[in-house]
Image (cartoon, rainbow, N blue to C red; front, top):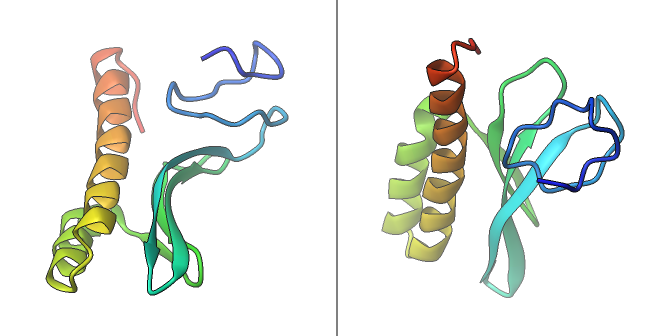
Length: 108
């Protein structure tokens, strides 16, 4: 992407925000309305950490990597399939980045 402040900023390909070098990488995967309240699913990555899936709005929940599919299934069971799909898409963004790094010889 070409929305970087400095070319030396090592942003992952999915990072959508303009931020200073060393800032938090972020992409909003999507949002839905649940009981009249906006809920966003975001992928965040702070410096020196792996990315994480976050559900935010009226509440803030960081979903552990090993729990992505379980969270999506729970949301589906609770009648929130659109929110579940966003969690799955966010997890896929993270998985694609890890696979890309692994194929390039990088390690996380």
